[in-house]
Image (cartoon, rainbow, N blue to C red; front, side, top):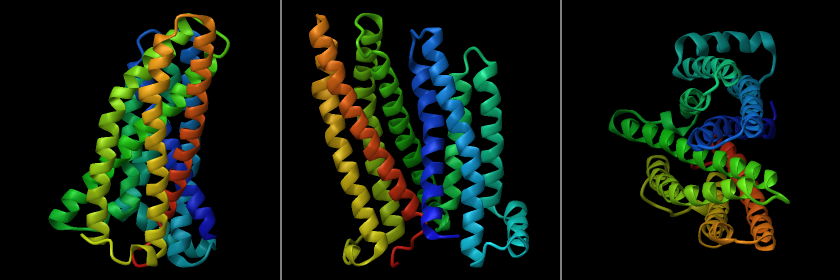
Amino acid sequence: MDDWMTVAARGGLYTALMLVFGMSLFRARLVSVDHRLDGRFRVIVATAIIAGQFLSVVAFVAMVANMTGTTAFAANMPIVRTLLSQMAVGYAAIARIAALMLSLVLVFMLRRWAWPVTILGALALASVAWSGHGVMDSGWRGALHLPADIVHLFAAGAWIGALLSLLVLAIRSRGRQGGEAALLGSASVAFASTGTVIVGAIVVTGIVNYLCIAGPTVQGIARSTWGLVLLAKLSVFALMLALAAANRYRFAPRLAAARDAFTTHAAIAHLRRSLWIEMSLGLTALLLVGWLGTLAPDA
């Protein structure tokens, strides 16, 4: 299978699983939500669940094809059976599919679906750590690297899920004033404080992951594909931080302080535009993460 298809499948899988976890978590923390808005969250999360199931299969097939160097079914099936029955990466894939299947049932069956789906989404998201660099170490390094990788995934998932959730609220608030705008304002301010914790977790676990993968040096980082992709990811992350700071210290407070229709609509428009850009950068970062997972530090 072509490398770009593998990267796209991995990046798409990260995106889908982070949306399942992050949007469910965001919805669980919203107190006052009407039936129509709750329905929008259900549909988006359900779509992400279905995408996650499909991309789990695609990414697994791509991984096997890269291992064998062929897409031939007969040649790859013995490897697939071995991975699924004897290897941690196979167990993780099975657990992921099971968690997603149960999530799809619960998201439509339960009235208060958000917290159960958040927990199952966390399990599904954590499972991808077993198909990346997080399992490259053993001993104390492995005991540090894998949990750091999982926390990194959770923090990124909470961020990406919150961005799309806020976008849903911002689009719903377009041309309106009152409850919808107030909900967007309060949710934006609430996420601003949580965002500090998320960014801190991403930075700390990112440093731990780098030290475990490449060691305590940056020498020669720009001379490998892995290093260049990492630098590109860090650049995108820096841009996201700048936009997040603008949302926290400028756009969200401006919306919360708005007292008339004109200033409210203007504040919503600025916040919505910033969220679109930040979300686009987030998706770019996840595509780069999917690429990083296929590379070795010296590649």
